[in-house]
Image (cartoon, rainbow, N blue to C red):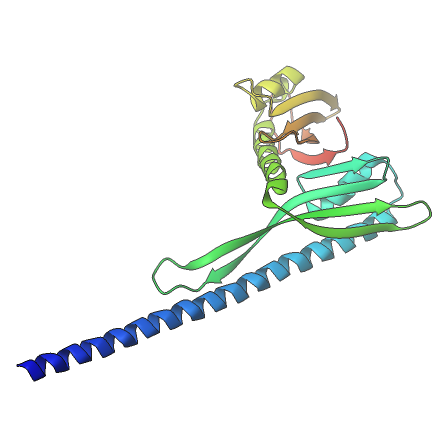
Length: 239
C-alpha cells in the first residue's frame, strides 16, 4: 500500500510538473507572439501615416491655392483627420487622429481572436517662404487624440441627422434643434446658406473633455421642397 501510494504521488507530481511547464511555456510563447504581432501592427500604422503625410505634402505642393480652407480640404481628403488646425503665424497645419489596426491575439483559452492596437498620431505640414510643403509625423499620448475621436463621432452623427432632415427644416434654428435637441452645445450652427439645389451648413463641433473644437461645412442637396438627401462634411479652418 505504501509503495503503491508513493508511486502514485510521484506520478501525479511528475504530471503536475509537466502541466505547469507546458502552461509556463504557452504563456511565454503566446506573450512573445502577441508582442511581435502588436509591434508589426504599430509599424503598419506608422508606415501608413508616413505614406499619408508624404502624399498630402505632394498634394499641397501641387495645389494652386494658398487659401486655408482649401488646403484644409486637401489635407482632409487624404488624412480624414477629424481635427485639422491652422497656425497662420507659422504657416502650419496640424492634423490629429487616432489610427487602429487589428491583429489576431494568441491565447490558450477560448476568447482570443482579433484585437485592435491604436496609436495617436499628429501629422504636421509646414510651408516656409520659397520652400515646398514639408511634413512630419509624431506620436502623442492617447489623451491628445481623444477629443479628435469624439469630434469625429459627432460629425458622423450630424451627417446622419442632416441627411434625414426635410428641406423646409434646413434653417439655422432647424439644424440647431436637430443636432442639439437637449440644448447641449456640442454643436453650434453658425450659418446655413442655400444656393440653388444645395444647402451648406457651417457648424462648430466641440469635444466635451477639453476645449477642442473644429469647424465643419456640411453640404446637402435639396431634391425638392420636402425631400431628403445624403450630406457630406469637410472640415474648415474657421466658421
